[in-house]
Image (cartoon, rainbow, N blue to C red; front, side, top):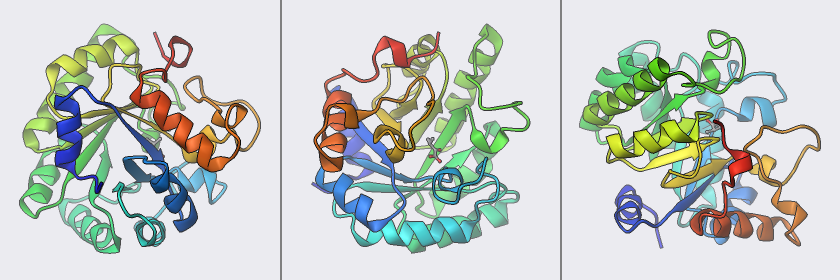
Length: 263
Ligand code: KIV
């Protein structure tokens, strides 16, 4: 079944969960699509896992377009969300221009990292027929202002700001809210505050969908991983099996378990 934003909203209404992975090429798109993964993110994490950098900052709009085209070429059912890279939306005009290129490359939705100042861009994108996901919490493009890749919204005030930002951006038209590395209890409050589907990564179980970097769930490369990562190759026979098992665990609520969550 072709996954649309409406299909995700209907799942939320029925209390059904969905799974999402990052995807950067046609072969992984084919395998993950066959496993029934509902949402692919052509994420700027490709700057680290594909290009080998130590942050997402060098990734360009052209890089994301290149990978979006590759993913779109073999995606039959999943909804493709493409990342607005670092400074891609430094002005309204730049954000619109970059979104046009990403949508023309095959994206179905644009993901924007940031804060409440995204509201005017979201409103304009929506008026042009572009669906939007906003990414809050740990926003890797702000790694230097955040002083590292660290869990966010850990105190009462910053949790309140996160929830208010999500409400503001939902009112501006955001269709999905993605939250990264925030305490599970904050996600639980967020869930009550907005109607849009929530996708979480290191954000606890009270989300409509979960996302992982595809390579992380395959356990590659070996070495220390973030708390929320689960290596599905430990139980699966092959890569296709790992994606299927991941999706099964997300939709049955087995993943994330308490050890994958922040307090
Ligand atoms: O770029 C990316 O992979 C992301 C996920 C970590 C959510 O933004």
